[in-house]
Image (tube, rainbow, N blue to C red; front, side, top):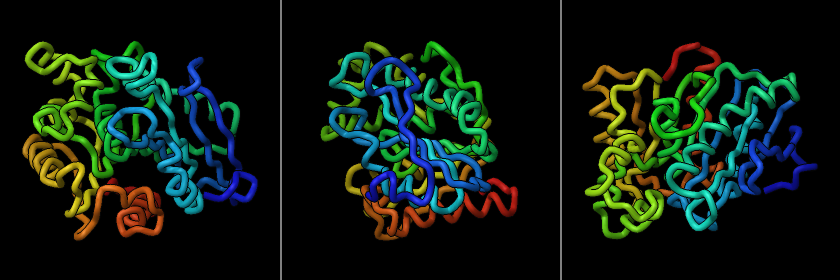
Length: 267
C-alpha cells in the first residue's frame, strides 16, 4: 500500500471508542460523489488479522470517488473481543460516521454501503438487524445496501465444519450451539431472513475457506422470503481475492457500487 501522504485523497485514522482497536482509517477523496463505503476485514474474527488486509482495496475504492471507512474492531484473543464486544464495535463504528461527517463536511453518506470480507462479511450482513438484541446500541444509519464478500452467512454450518468450528466457538465465548442456540440465531445472517435491507454477495467459485455453496443457500433463502439480494459468483475466484484490488472480484465490487450512483437502482 502507498504511504498515506502519497494517496490521492486525505487519510485520517480516527477512534470511535476508547480501546486501541476501536478505530478505523478514513480515506476521503476531494470529491466523494459516489457516497461512502464501510469495510470490515476478515480473519475469522480473531487476532492478529487486522484492517490492513483491506487497505489496498480501500485505496482503490476511494480512487473511484467513495469515502472509505476501513474499520478495526476487537477480535477474539483480545479483551472484549467475541460475543458481544465484536458486535458492539460493528454497530458503533458505523454509527460513528455521523460524528465523522461533522468533522469532515465533504463526506457524502448517501449512498452508504456496509461491506465486509469473510468474517467481516458476516458482520456486515448481521447489521441488517441493526444490532437489535445483541449490541448495546443499535444502528442509527440505514445503509443503502449490505455487501458480503465471500462472507460467513451461516454460523451453524461454520461451526459444523471441523476446520472452522474453533473460530466460531471463540467468537461465541466457547459456548456451543447446543447451549446457546438463541444467541447463535441472533448473530447468524441466515437466521435473520427476511431482512429489509438490500444485499449484494460476491463469492469466488473456488473458495477453499468459505464454500460458495453457503452464499448460494443464503441467497436462495433470501429470495424465497422476498428479500432484495443479488449473488455474483466469480468463476475461478478464491477467498483472498478481495485483498487484491486488481482481482476480478474487487473490480466487480467497485463497478457495482459505482453503477448504483449513476442509475439509483440498488443492484
